[in-house]
Image (tube, rainbow, N blue to C red):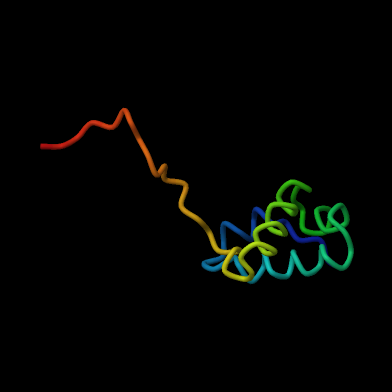
Length: 78
């Protein structure tokens, strides 16, 4: 298999969930370490996407907002 750099492709793609699905399916078949090497990412990243895929299915592979749900020191506008 051709080595893929996950982070470079992620920046260029509009919908990276299809690549993440390929990565998860490859990991389930070949293992986490080999997948991390082939996709040019870390084992932690591969494990994160496998966990999300197992919990939520394909919808778990979509980007999630990083905005905090609670911000106690926020300044309120009048």
